[in-house]
Length: 172
Ligand code: X6L
Ligand code: MG
Ligand code: MG
Image 1 (cartoon, rainbow, N blue to C red):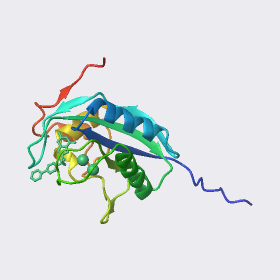
Image 2 (image 1 turned 120 degrees about the vertical axis):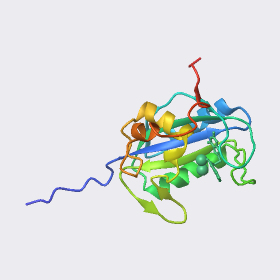
Image 3 (image 1 turned 90 degrees about the horizontal axis):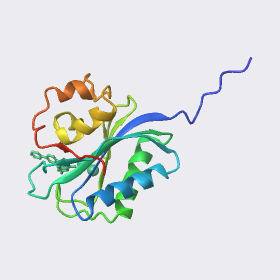
Image 4 (image 1 turned 60 degrees about the vertical axis):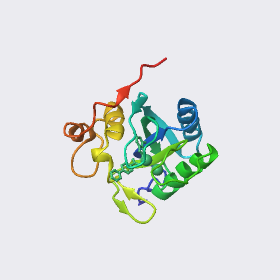
């Protein structure tokens, strides 16, 4: 009797949040998406519209373009994060001011139903629930996304503050 062979490569559904507010923001997002979809072990499932969003946080800076994507991946969580950081570096991100302007930011928001809390990674991303620049694009493409507090992205959006400044851009 043969045991059913565990599929080592069953992909996990994930959500990524991307943002840019330096240089050619649209080109930075497109470059990141192209690199993601060409990455071994990452399949792009969905991509939100582009959203222009006011800067959140303590650092005054220019408006962002933000999007979310859904990806399926066979990479382990920390390997997915590593790939995202590599792509940030390839696109010329320089980390100087904490929470300051950036060429490209790629955050792992959700990795299946995994809960992770270590120095490198916290999943689901603990602060997405009150950031309209994340929840609005995420709910567009994955309203049922489990954001980690028992609610879905669409449910969290019902009570998320500061939604008015987030503007969906028409496709050109
Ligand atoms: C107090 C202290 C209040 C810190 C808020 C909020 C810090 C957000 C960092 C905060 C605080 C952040 C983006 C952004 C940033 C982005 C838009 C961050 C990291 N990233 N604003 N600000 N889009 N619109 O991707 O989210 S910095
Ligand atoms: Mg971020
Ligand atoms: Mg980041």
